[in-house]
Image (cartoon, rainbow, N blue to C red; front, side, top):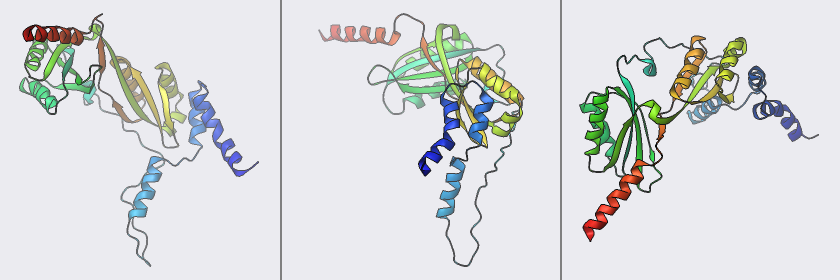
Length: 270
């Protein structure tokens, strides 16, 4: 047996548990935590050390940052988490906007919210299935009258093709979140692994310092997973993506609008 076989045998248990579908979360964490990987922190430390000027006869320069092996979790304070603020009496509306792919349109759209003093909760921008058209998915808390007014103001922009507002039961919603958990706390408290399994979250990375868990689902599921883990004080970092959404309608409103506009342009040309 050569050196490569030895290395392979040492690293196989963790990888087999991660990829083999074993449901024992604790076993996965323990096996992966025993492997001393080249983590991001170690590579960053080595890179900084290599770039520091070295002087013969003098001690090595002190690192600008140090990384502790056992990270400390800091639970968030209720009422001060951005996604947890109370919006009593307001409804969460999702605005789906289509526009031409030109620079500066995003600034024009967000300016409408600024003028109306409406705070944007999340914003997602991507190219749509229609060539040359971009899709904006924006969520905000407001009343129905305000949501309709925002849509009308946005549609007045020259390069905006179409804008619509929806409540949650009118669209399919999906969000993705990443949670960095303290590995020592995960090993010490089995309730953490139960919460992760109960919410159907997925392990992305495990090392002796932290465990990264990914959870994808609707907004309530993502926040519920975070809240339960945060109550145990094991969350080091939490981030979630902007909402992506598609309508429940049988027809695509943008395609209907573009077809109608093309027919009008053809008739005017004739």
